Length: 321
Length: 316
Image: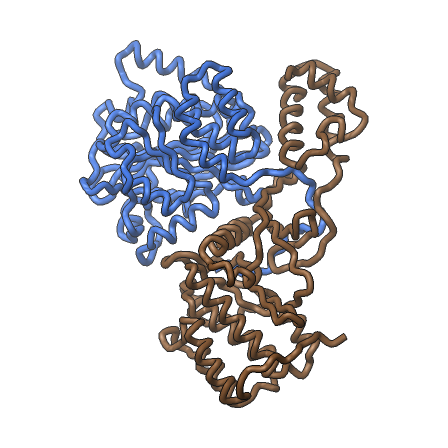
């Protein structure tokens, strides 16, 4: 998966077609579906793969998973309409040469029909097919918690990404939601939703440590969701992810925020320069983006290009546990 | 900048400095990427001047003075190079980037949480860096650590004293090692690899610095990510089995360091003290380094009387 020619215009045509026929872009969900589309079902997935290819020699894996439970209100629909722009934005800005993007959705494993939905890493409009297949759950529990930990478990143990395996470069994981994770990854839920053999429950901190080894992980809280600005939710995620918590003032700016976060992380753009870029193209996302990213920009580590000497030979004297 | 301007800039350049300036690597790298984008054959299809400029740009980039100094030390996972603000410690294998990130986080926590009078026990992180090899695209994380002139590792001390170190000399090292470990634990950080190469002492000043925080753990549910291969059999068995490591791990490994250092010159009473730190059950082991320090002080007082300063020097 993940190879193909880039284009973002097919989605526009598809959206126009859907608008003309009265179907929303969440075609699968609106068609009366009540269970996870087979293409997005995490069950028995060994690994979602983001691989290098002749076409994309330096692939960079990017995953965007969003909460589709009721507390998110209209945000999932807005995200679905906006997110197809992400690929083009990354390419146009030159932030990433070979992005491979995966979309997915998060529900509540304690009570939902679709606690986790995951697409494939794609570098063309096939990623839009995954978006349109997402089942809008709309349920969720009432405890201000959803199964984000299950999504992180999947990302940590059921993805295989060349950017990390071959180049030591973490992928980018964006979790868009408005609630907290459960305190443990439950072995029973893993068996039911993902399959495979997790023997015992895993504490949340352990799975966060695991996922952040391969994924530079961000939590995005949209202002239009029920728990926007909630101190308990924000504090919870800051405790887990530090500065990588973004309050998204304007849902329409989601692609700009994600793209600029990646640009900052890749060291190919400075915050000021990125914001200027946005103004140049007439984006109204500037203020929202700058508020959310000022902290991340200040805390990011600068990237230097330097030919590695021969003595950096890849050997390691440690044993991984 | 337009493609035409980029091409003109590159064509006029007589050396890397004309394009990338003298500034730091970040600015140069950004310029390089930008110019490459503007002159890339995809951006200027069929333009032979652009193609020439693109090739020349790559050549200029290759000729840019390397920013690695000479190799100083080859550690377990990283190489240390001397650079301007300190020692650049960089992962040899990019799969170990998480360990470098861990070190930077832990050193920042220690700096923020440890009272100033105890900070000398810990290395000073000048800055964290990310380096990418432009050819392969491989990214390695690096930490720039302030150099520690005059310090030697316990491994070097052990090699220099083949019959073992006099316990009265080892006493100050043991005491200081417990001070460092206790301070880190109170700041919420477990070192995770207290091994002879990671304990540096200053012989004349009786100084001690606990280095290499790549294996460290912070937080109650944290798990040990890796162990140092050469010292695999030094770790308590349950740590290798379930990865869970508490403060007792640092005390266990510190004890191993000291028994190794003193070797056959270990007095019987001190050997029993060490054995009491290396019990099979984690629940039976000491976990508070500073309380253990008080016990050690009592024992040293009984063995050797009041403390006096004993000059210590490495053999010439």
